[in-house]
Amino acid sequence: MNPAIKNPLLFALVGCLILGTGLIQGWNTALLILNMGLISAIMALGVNLQWGFAGLFNIGVMGFVALGGLATVLISMPPVGEAWAAGGLRVILGLIAGAATIAAAIFAQRRFLGRSRTFITLGVLIVGFFTFRAVFDPGVAAVEAVNPAATGYLGGLGLPVLLAWPVGGLLAAGAAWIIGKTALGLRSDYLAIATLGIAEIIIAIMKNEDWLGRGVKNVIGLPRPVPFEVDLQSDPVFVERAISLGLDPVTASTLYTKLAYGVLFAIVLIILLWLAQRALNSPWGRMMRAIRDNEVAAEAMGKDVTARHLQIFILGSAICGIAGAMMTTLDGQLTPGTYQPLRFTFLVWVMVIVGGSGNNFGAVLGGMLIWWLWVMVEPLGLGLMNLIASGLPDGSNLKDTLIDGAAHMRLLTMGLILLLVLRFSPRGLIPER
Image 1 (cartoon, rainbow, N blue to C red):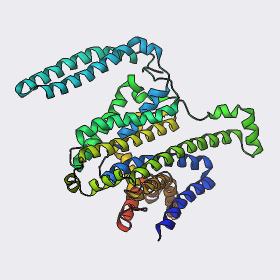
Image 2: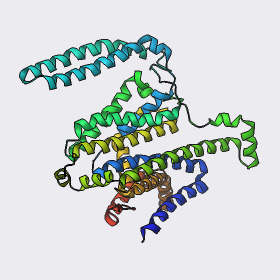
Image 3: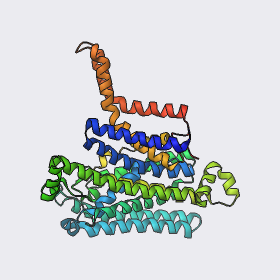
Image 4: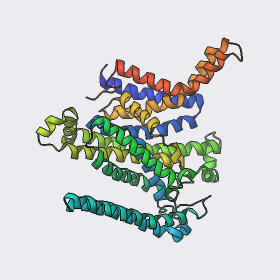
């Protein structure tokens, strides 16, 4: 089929699936799927930049998403004055001491030669480590002791939450620069292992450092860029308008809020997609694909492969960080325990592969389609299992096994779809041109 006809039909199919969900299960469910689908499409777009443009196998996506979520807390939540007074300055000085130790060790490695370099570097690290702990630990203990049931952390800057989205991208980009300088010289399979391990480290830090974002106690009540439902329900103009449309004000307020989120997310997605397309069709994009296809030939043409890999790794990670900040804003809370690097990174990779690696529109399609399936497969599978087992007597082991198996339909379906796409359309639903 002509791509000019097929591609719009595929997006229309996804739109019909979401509309059908709204007609059958309710518009609240459909809009929630739409919003998370838009965020998933942005994540897939970031991974597609790394893999589809440059062939970088990054399976630490959730680490960068988590950093975006952390940025939401650091930017939008108000500062906790008591915590800052108790130990905030010591925490900051401790972090500065730690950074100075690393910088001094790097300087020693570059400045000295021979055995003296080893002994001086080791001495700097030992002295710096104990200095860091002596300053940092008492500050952390003092901060976490301040009303730990409700706060126990430093809080944020109290700025508008929309500023957290680009800051989340910058925070993820900074982490990607540090990781890239270390790991991008590795072979692709070792790079994958390194990025997964680093993502686990990032999430472990977020879970255990309560002074930073309350750890597993979670930060709730994050500010929102759209009105709260309660505020809308107390607005006489909104209530009157909802009643005139034949809607219950409570339902109308929920739909309005979710629709407002969808508009914001769609604007961000369109901007990022436009920028990604401009990059893909530019000389820089053609150079990245040339490096992806043959690094040796690109190096022979004078291209700095490692530097270009670092560029694309930072850009893709920044997009994932933006998506993470958007997702935390939508949830209204930061829950580090829900970031599962291997499971959800696999889901994002399925989106990229099914949609079409190397094609930005394919990544967007894959993100929307796979998220719809991820949400809807379990209830659809439960209905299918109930239908299959309807002729079996109640209490039979086979019937119970079939119904219980519906809980595993998500991963089974993702694997089946991935196999079918790789078999019949190995370049994805919308292949790279």
